[in-house]
Length: 473
Image (tube, rainbow, N blue to C red; front, side, top):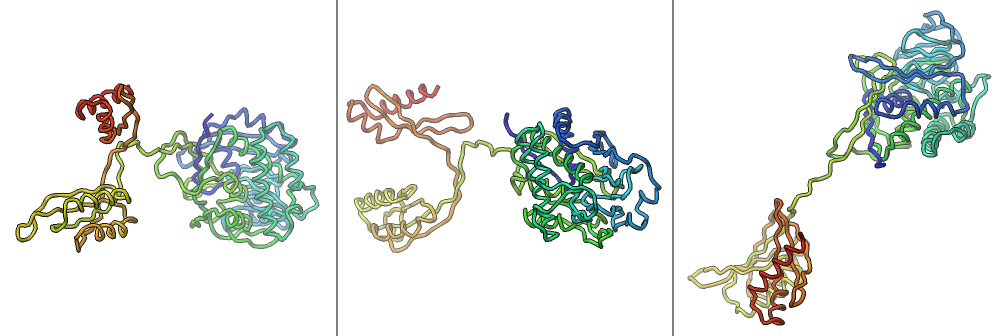
């Protein structure tokens, strides 16, 4: 099956769950996704795939809902009002828990389930537009609590033991490595010491594996990523204040040359998971100059901003340049007036110029001063041959001045074919233009056949031209 080209338009940021939703909306097989996720040795969660209307735009929503601690909590907790040891509100209006990095676009609470689309439970249901890489600390991903945790090697083992395709496994492991690499740099720890929180890692494993399954299922080849639109401000967590973009996103963007565009939105639009997905799958930086859009998928975020929050994915096909019958290029034309050179010398000069790279050489009869008969020498050549052509003209003719002019030209494409006749072989130049084909026998071939056969030039020219036309039918 021919691989398709994917374009992710990240003008509202990018996160894990937004990417999965956009790919599902683009046509990734839902059953293949769910069966692949079931094969992971990870439990304690369920998947919701629904449709949502964002600013009157219909989009897909992918939600990883963790099943532990399913009771509702005080709304003060859910909306980020400060409670010691638990939640602080950041400048983007997103609450962050005591343990997790806010590496989603949006909010987390130390508590559990939410009745709005934004805050997160302690077990980390992704109900804000983005998935997180919950490594060990707040907003850097590393967690210093007493919960069990998984290393990168542990997560790779989980992925490798699943029933998803080899390609999907490689994509998922690459995304996780990029996140761990970024967190390692942020916290000054070796990659092997970076750990994912036991519970918080579940949604990251599901989001990242889901994205890999969908990409593999769509048979994506080339991947183009737009610049990543990010918010601004700060994230306040129990371990301090971090700027947006958070360190992991900055590290990934720097390491993998992702272009960031800071907007006036107060809040985090690009998560480490989203940035890692972009870094892992991008194959080309610039879109084709001309392309057609075959399908469009929209994956919604969970937060409400002043602009519509969704990730747009497109399957595109590059438009190939039209197969024109003509070629356009630039040549140089050299002219010289010659009135005191013999015909023999002019003939020799033409032969020398043609043998040494002139595209064409011609003489035009003219009258010069005092009504003297003369010739205008014309030489067509490329720019790189100009000095040598002028040297040959000055050396082999009597001119003392050469004019030069740059010119645009259009030529017909041509091929050369060999035609077999009863009198021998002949070379024919074949040109096409506007659904018509022209056959031009080469003069030297016709003269050679005439010498061998005793027939006249015109008869042989017509014969070769006719045979060339029949041979191409």
